[in-house]
Image 1 (cartoon, each protein chain N blue to C red):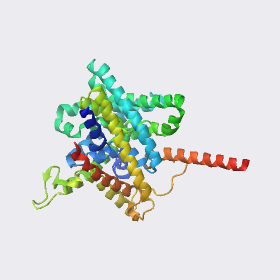
Image 2: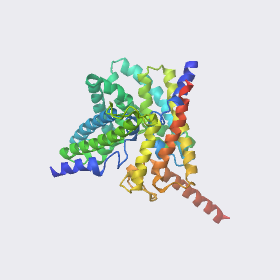
Image 3: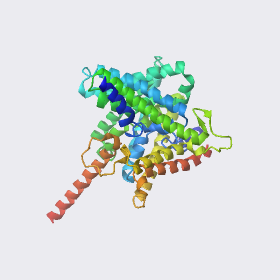
Image 4: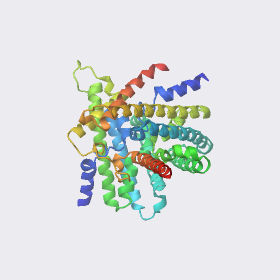
Length: 244
Length: 191
């Protein structure tokens, strides 16, 4: 039981996917115009995450090593389809406001990340709690950003007016640019107070992939390629000069 | 013809895929350090999205709609895209080495680019015809390329500027993206 609690704490606070790992940026930017949508998106992702972690953990000894990623994608996509159907049936309004971002949960890197790094290596109970912790961490992150943008951008909280009538909402914060600006301020504050965060890494990345996927975003792959090409070019030039 | 141009401009500028729809944020922020790599990534994205929108349209119409299996769209599309990226990589490696050299490293990164799946799903949702889907896919990818190349250009300049220490790294990039997003909002009156 202790391990399960530890997983919850890990997901919500220690490795919060929004604030610390900086994963799943697309929904974080797109669906935080108000707290209701943000929370809806967070909870939908949580359900998919818990269910896929459960199934992947159950099947962890059955899925062959070589085809595990496609297998995970199929499992996640199936749960996303189920959740989408449930939303269409019972929560039509939320379904309309989340729109295309529901099927896009499939490519949310938090879910595949947890499947690959935790659920495929651990027993069922901790995996469920890992999914629950990560999902709730994501929900809290989205809701907090959503509340902030909604309060400043339209003067409401959970779609209930809270600001005095004389308050002139700063519309920019509910428009697309506001999403970038809010996230910029958030990461700048994390930098300022030296909080633990994926965007806070300042040291130069070594040539080989350090395995720090959260701060990589695919950059190391291309950068390494460039560095290797450059080294090859230099070696070639040097050889040419020596030849002369 | 006029309709096609409207779809193209709408996809590339007005509803820019990264700056107003927030799809493909990861490569947008991650692979935009140099203009050269950004352009390479953009080229690969144009290539893959255009082919993917054609292929997903055909599969959707021939298989899914005919057999009343529309609810399988998400699963089928993601698998088709993943397989397509692999195929393109193998094909380029064998037949067009120069193109493989230029785009090869970026191809594996594209499977996780949600813009590709996003375009395929939008095409279905808007009930676009085959040609329109193709134009929409191409336009979206061009919009992505324009945005990522501009951001890379600005980031190259920022390196020589004196940025406040708290804003170094990701924050200043996000602020730049925010300002670009404001600029792109100006296109809203275009259609």
